[in-house]
Image 1 (cartoon, helix red, strand yellow):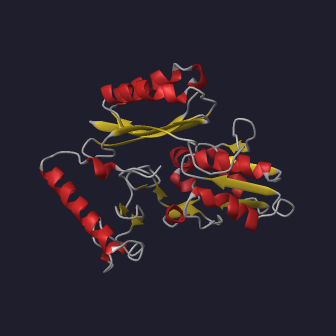
Image 2: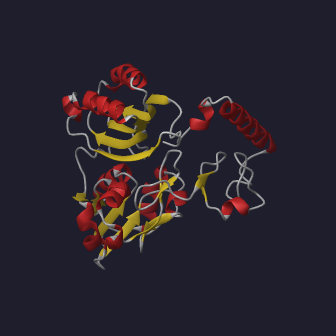
Image 3: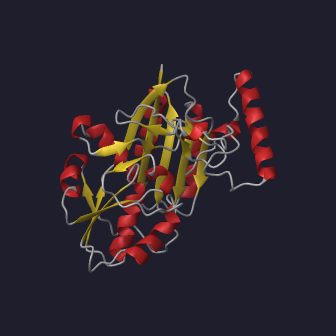
Length: 308
């Protein structure tokens, strides 16, 4: 049996988002769904996995809310043996994607959506500045050719990058993309507020592009980082070639794992100088507990902690 993985979001006013948490969590648990869903006044954002029937029940529940009736999602399938997520979390947040800038509302001001089938033509225009709105570790394993890498460690740094490096009087046309569409949708709203006139973003993000555009026509290079245990996906949305450093959450290639700094679950070349010896002892103990849980054929909860 295959497990269905869906990623979804919608910017919409949800003043009752706190009251939605418990019913949503209960529904997911009853349907054997694991993953993370974020709720905030500005909307909903989630990545979850479960049986096709369980996922359909979740989508039906969400769409029964008239504000989420047109909720869009991206789906893929993994083997039932792959533990994509280990538990279900519904978290209450100030933002469903954290930028940290007040008064940015994609429901009021938003850029121009570009369908995946039209994306190649847009970004091949020499007058268009193409920006990857994702973080540095995501960009490192794959991106569109010619895209500007802001070298951000978190989305909170994106506004600073724009203000320090871009000029509305010079950069007349800007196109942006991210994994599923949520970050560049908010980034587009921010840039329009900053005075940029023509701001475009890839509808459905990289995942929708890979799902829609034939590989022989694609101008995507590399793999796409995803926030679950697949770590990355290839152009066919199948699990990619990267593993994850469970100390710093960065993707690791086979070459990275040959480094003398690589200790599974404890350190890698990227984070060898980021943690103390006490941290590493704690990480090593976590690895030990995970292995014990696997031997008992149990899902160790800490192994399922994901970035959001």
